[in-house]
Image (cartoon, rainbow, N blue to C red; front, top):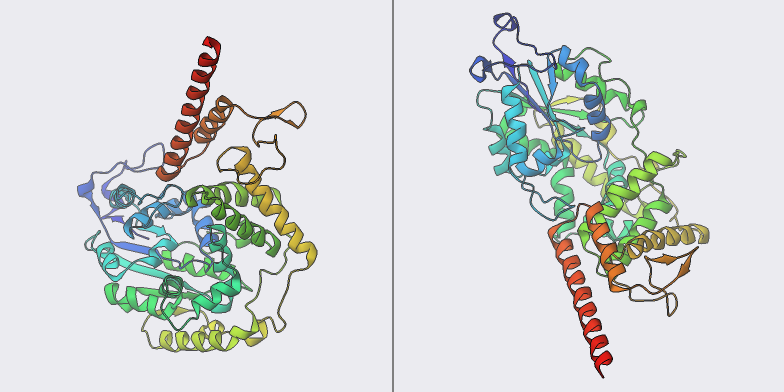
Length: 445
């Protein structure tokens, strides 16, 4: 997050425009304070970002700008940390970060706030670069802390939504593996909270780091602490009860995981799988399905010792970090009573429902002709074109070409996916050309 301020508002009596933004020469501005909320993931970021986004106007009247136009500055943070866009497979352009910086530099508010959990993925070199973007600014880095046994199930579910095919137990084995692997490296880079605090503190100074202990029983506490940090009135960020951030139930997550397996088996590009689930399935469920308030899942008991040991070590290091800690650090030490003492196995009905969901999702891709068909329902069935009331008929190359063109026009696909579709269209065109040549030859004979 970042905060900017003008020397004195009284020097510019007519600085506010009709749109509520400010039109002041850049030379008249002076950066005073920059607040960056870096997450990490699964620590209440959605609640905080939704509150900041929906209270933009009220915050602006208090001299606080929440930078960016959406709920969070994900694209800018991904550009700053050199990440790839999951929907395209391409690296996020640097222009996204530069655009956010421009807004921050041209802001007249005394405080500018930036938030994205993507910042938690930054390397030490990237953190140093971020610190140099606004010379002379007074930085405040905000990090949310949550108990490890709460983070693990939530993070795995998010991984599945983003395309993972491994089960929760398989993933936990990778996370706690004594040998280095990409899964554990990526997870602990963001969730060894003490090392995250240290990494940012080495650049900005430990006094510039504020860590907030998230209380699952009182999610509004995070909002109240944030209000205090940015200088907003108490209650300005509202309540977490107004945030719709439904956790998917176990059957749904397992259905999505099985869909990922099916899609991978049939060669569906990862960008298309990601697009299907994150831009279609999950938003639709969140919009149209009422949450039953069921448990979001627990870590199996066999991982209790490792979770307790890791969380104890994290808390010990945080106590001596020199960072400003808000909340009770003891709440971050894992409670053994929260583990599944008896291994949970899905019932036959849950297995069936997950399987139905997986095949339903995959069937939609087949119906749009976005994936190859390796098994046929029966000899004459080709999904995607229906004649009459559900009576299947064989498709022509023209039918399939029209389907592909419509699908491409309605989805934001990556270069790899578009190339595969183009090759398929080319193949259809060649087949059609050969068919017509054969017809003419037969007609002449």
